[in-house]
Image (tube, rainbow, N blue to C red; front, side):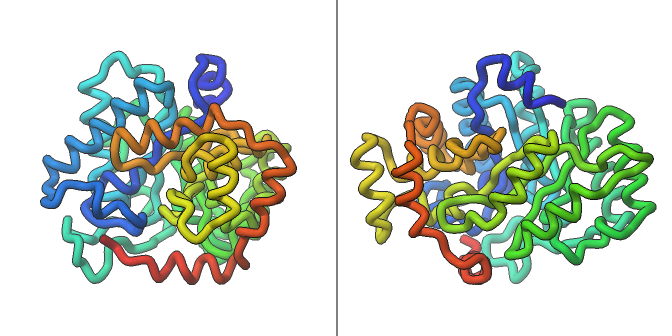
Length: 321
């Protein structure tokens, strides 16, 4: 898997994450009003297909799923089978969280974290059963500084063996310790070869703390994927954010496009994920690639940044709807 080849094909640097369309409940603000009132598996599969079709038609060539995204891998596999013309997409997924929501919006718990070697083997088998040879990238899901992935040598060797089979191995990070986790992960090697080839992290106008670590990862030759660039919907509209509203007015774009454009402005951001739940959201998000945010205006948006612990406490309080 190479994002260089995606860029060479003329595809947008935007990718599509399936966290919000693979299961009936998620924490993205405003999502509840944009989804079918009755979220059966069939209804959510149909919506996932609509979003995937819109993304592909507009140049998106990286698709990102996870074992914990409900049926996201299942939906993606079905869409790939339905769209043989989409052989040029790069497919990524993640292991390390298990979906336990039982397809209920009101579940007490929706996902459970487990970074053990046993979880890796179990979930890799499940992912391969659905995606087969279409799996290009397999990422540790939400690596934190206390993850056993950083210390379990046998697990590291198993991940390296997967890479030797031709599947790119990467990580995603979450939480206020993202920078620490990324730095530790970049140092890992097996037989003198860096273990992780890609780094996915939360980075947005409200939570930019991982920026220096992501720049370091990019400089070291890793592919950087940005998730949650709209802060789980907090930046999808400019309500209460006058600086973002002002830049949207000047640029002629919407708040979501401007917030995404600000992330695309970072030279180390190889791919920036949209978390769209409608085809219209896809088109609005992708308008970001045509918006130019100069350095002075980008600096003006820095006032929106929150202390990382505050940002992650707020995120943890978001309701699953």
